[in-house]
Structures are given as C-alpha cells and as structure tokens.
Image (tube, rainbow, N blue to C red):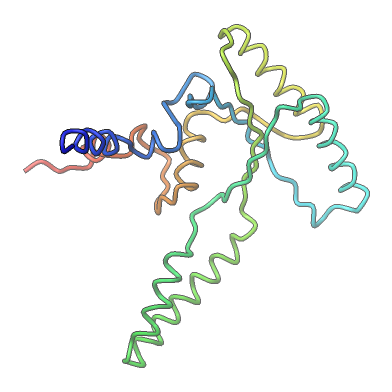
Length: 200
C-alpha cells in the first residue's frame, strides 16, 4: 500500500504549471501544446468610441465575414498591462487593520494612486486571433498561416503574426507576473533564476 501511495505522490509532484496548462514548448510558429500548435495574430485595436454607428456596423460585418472565410479562428482578449487588484486588496486590508491615523492616510493615498493608474489603463487591451494547427507539414503550415494572415487583413483588421517575445509577454501578463520586461526567459523557474544569482 505504501509503495503505491509513494508512486502516486511522485507522479503528482512532477506536474508543473507547464503540464497543467498543456503547453509543451515554444514552436516555430507559436506554442506547441498537448492539443496541437497554437498560432497567434496580434490585432491592432480600433477605438470604437470615436466611430459612427455606421462604421461600427461595418466593423461587425467585417468580423462576421472573416469567420465565414475562416471559421476555425478563435478570439482572445487580454489585458495589455499588469493588474493591480491583488495590491489594492492588500492595501485595503492594511487600512482596516491599521490603528495609526497617519499611516492609514498614507495607505489610503497609495490605494487611490493605484485606482487612478488602473483607471488610466482600463482600456489597455490586446486582441488576438488564434488558430490551431494539427499534424500538418511545415510547408503546408507556412502557406496556410500566410493565407490566414492575408484573409484577416483583407477584412479590414490590422494584424500580424505574434513572435516569440510577444507570446512570452502576454503569457506573463495573463499568469500574473508582476514585472514584465522586454527580455523574458524561455523558462520561468530554477534555470531562469540562475541568471540573477550573484556569485560570492
């Protein structure tokens, strides 16, 4: 009984975040997952608040036509910057616990500052079209991906295929990394941490 239990625990302990979310590695075109290869097209957003109703209707029609031409496209909408919710919750709890009125006032100012930043960035979004590739040759993939990018742009969307650095950036934001830099490692863990270790 104990041997079986130990084996089960060992198997579970080997399941990292990478396995849990199904990502195997970066691929030539995007991300290699347990359900095929994911390729992302980064779409430049349009501020519809300055568009007329007729222009908005045209945009909706363009999107409908795009899905008629390419029905296997998927849409992703992600934050384009870090989220401050956890920091705001922490400050809120500190304000409730703090007895010193001067410190409470400082904490309240910090909370208000984060509120103002979040309000300024509340419209910061990035939009992506995503396609899943399954068991196709590299030659077929190349032609297919170029055709999809052309179809997206022909329907009035300003899009380009996301490169490796772009994919790492939006994955970092999605999974709550607090600091997003331009030089992100491929592996987030022990190997990546070694880069920042200062020798004695």
